[in-house]
Image 1 (cartoon, chains in turn red, orange):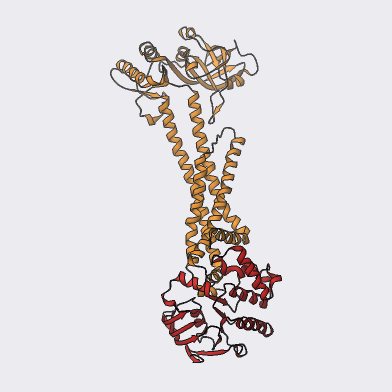
Image 2 (tube, chains in turn red, blue; image 1 turned 90 degrees about the vertical axis):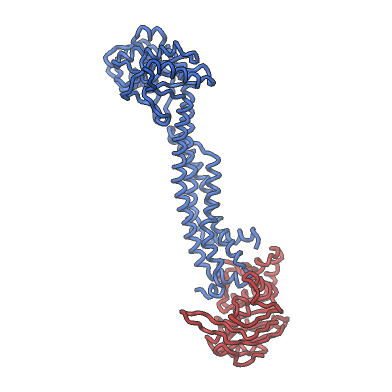
Length: 223
Length: 401
């Protein structure tokens, strides 16, 4: 489902070209639970952003469900993110002035679903992550673990083929982190493809496959 | 994202910053209100003057000494050019076929005294048809008649203000007043005409032209006020009078014949310019209001950088973000526009209510233009911040603290 072929990415920082990814080749099959490990600055977040179509590679080929991402316009990328990808961030990234349910429904606003249907779906998902009783609370009124569960519900709402999580437990204590990992495992069991970036070994071990990235090259687990 | 959705998202975010949104709107409210108010003042003044001039009779030509262009307006009779005389007025009345009357008018100021009270006022020397021509009504007594003029009678007709100030509540008819050094008998009182644009047209005394020439020791007329038979004959009458006067002035055209319509047209032109200037000044405040919107939208975009990143990550297109922010600025300016219309109308009505002499007239076109302009300002000053928001790189925006 995800095929990366010799992906390179470089940025220009203070007038100097910094090569973050130096040729990653990787294939991820549907239904896999994969974690990407590596020290900070190794390029693992950059790789996740590329897979999530938030960014484009400088060179190399990326096929997502057979679509060549390099040929798509910004708007088409937005559409791919909307229909195929769900993001879970370390900092939760909920919109602070919107209630939990309004945050969950957000991706559907951009897919043109009728409001009644999308509200029902959002509520069902909040129920699934155990937060239906807090649907109308603002993020600031929720604990970190609750906020992350809202953002998982948001990631799931458009029924994505790919769920991307960037250090999803990084801002949580280990007990809450464990709860979040349990949710990931249960949605994986239901067939979701999950790619998770982490630098914690204990968290990465929940995944079926672990790849390690160091200095922009794949150290282990890439095939 | 559809239109309703976009508007509702914009509405939500405006609601979070209630005070900020309200303050931003005030800029537009003041701008739109000012446009409507100032245009209504200009338009009110225009209508008032049209009305006043219209009430001063129709089908009238005025012959003044000196050659002036139309734009010169009225002459004050002080020029050194060749004077127009009483005899010339009489001659025109006799010879011109297209006119009904030619009234020799003398204007001056003098003291009028009665039993220790006195007042400095305008003295107008006229002949009997003047009251009909100018639509002036006599309330008590009678006006000046032909024999008063012929025999230089020392009689006067008082305007309302003069009567009130000089004679008071006493019976004015038959009272003997002093004008200059001469005693005049009061024969009539004018019906009140009221204030017109701050000028009291009741503060005037009418006496026979012949007496006025004596009083001011002159043979120079202020003007000849001519009543033409009907509107179609105005041009004809003008030609006729011109011919008669040129012959008497040794073939020199050293006088000007103005028609009432021309004077109204000149006034109208001046007042249109005034209204345009007022509207222009008000528009500046509307533009300042627009800059206020842009300023606040830029702050809002900056504050919500992360939100923009989140929205983009979950599938918002550049266009969605652009429209969201544009909707906010347009909502601000349109609601401000509606508020401004209410404010402008309220001020226009209130101003006339509290200050009688300041006529206002609200025109529908100023309301429509002010409203459309405020909407345009919302778009114009909203596009830059909204575009800025739309073009944010989602990765950078997501990392923004």
